[in-house]
Image: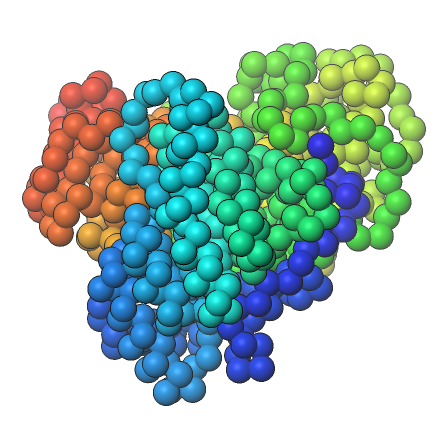
Length: 594
């Protein structure tokens, strides 16, 4: 299987065009040769027409090209008529997407008023109970027929009215039927989407795109690669556009880093026709990140340089860290083998940060580049390495983008029968003018995160960020976001929408204030149950909106506390963490108690 023309040379995936609205009247065409489209979602109650209109206008003002609005009930879907009418009366022609999950009737109503309908195959026709059941082939076929009966009316209506559709699976909301046959896997996500696509095609409806979203960038990358490879196997006319996004990415630097890893890696391989950066912040903040990220892709992907025809060193459809021997970096720090991915800094950075480092700090340099025994290689030419215990990296000044260069280095080492540990760099050349911190963050995240998702890298060196402390912190944050290392509390937080049952930004800040010292603990903060239980499958604890002003608490994907008043919920979450032996007192409180 292949997911792109070449992982060493950029070729944008050839897709059919999908039309959202009327292009002559502000509609959007995605796919084909059209630029990648930026989209986002409003966060207010869909029944609040005035707020919905204003939030849409605010998004359009900063460059959003498609706006999504949740329609959890038929009543909400019906109010889309008023929202769209008011937007058009104010001269705003931006296409509107109705976000549908559990209610086919709501989808049928919404399709009357908006340009696009998003359906989630995992819960459009199924109610998730996390039930364990073996399906016979006959039972499975019967389930598919039931789904076809529920989904076909919407397909026919969209075809009749000229609407577009997004078939969007989420890692957190696969149906019990898919889970039982394929597991909570990228394959399950792909098969779930293809079932719905086959129904659409059987009704001669092709104006749709796919999405495969996960809060884990490595899972998300795997899913999209597998989807595109499967579409290619199915035939040339299965070349539907895809929408990229890391769902529940969170806020601040962490949300931006996770999104840059997942979205940026795929864009550099020529995949993606629309994108959204899902942040637990005000929606307009997402648009600037999308634009900045898209602006970096041309220089981070290989557009011109010829690369030797060589086999990849890794399986792009199943993550596995590259096997290497363990070596000494110095100072008692080991690298490679089963060791965690190490953080290396330049001498200049060490000089800046060393005086501030305390013995117990988790964020600290583990090697100084100039002091290491590193063999610098130009992977575009033949080279020899004396032994497998030699740390290698790509030489500065090589005329390739870093992602391509390190993929090529790993591939050539494999061809030589060598497994040397590799030190990754975020850049191979410097400009006279330092990068803006927000740009340095995105570039380092795309480059290093992409390679870590490929399983390449035993140490990392961030140099694009000029600030010493900032570059060190960024390196650790990239490792955490890529799932390679845990040095702080990990949060999965949804970006809010009209389904959200509490103020996500306020509550997230409150939870972080109480728990951000819990190294290695993963906490999910979800506004509703649409993706909650599934996205929390690999979280230790979950805080989920169950009803207005009521919170349900989870351990893993199992709800254990119900209908807790919101005013008490953070305290009860802390109590739950204590009950399960994951709580430690913050250092300042522990010292005071001592």
